[in-house]
Length: 125
Image 1 (cartoon, one colour):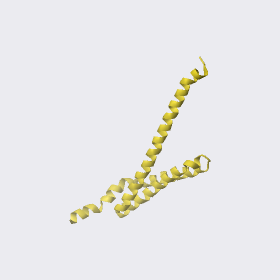
Image 2 (tube, rainbow, N blue to C red):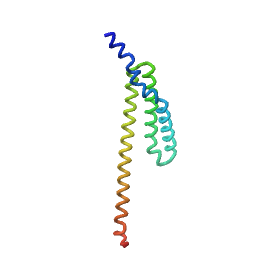
Image 3 (cartoon, one colour):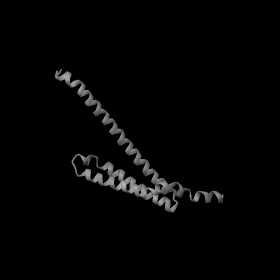
């Protein structure tokens, strides 16, 4: 029993080390995302979507703080909280990316179709 306890004491520190090493980058990207959201909120159209970069930036910043706490205190709940924030961040970014790809595809095929059908509709030969 004692060997298992000694083994588990440093496991969170060991697992969280790669994220702990890049927590500064996570905070930088988080802050830049928040700033871009605030700048987008200054425009009329941007105000509709400005909450997304602010939210993702806050998630990254909170994850970086939690991973720092997990590494320094060997805390399993802090590690879980950090990974949960990262999971939410990647889900949001995945959905945004899928929506972007769908709109790109619709636009591409829309322009392709417009170029194909425009001469026929306008009777240009």
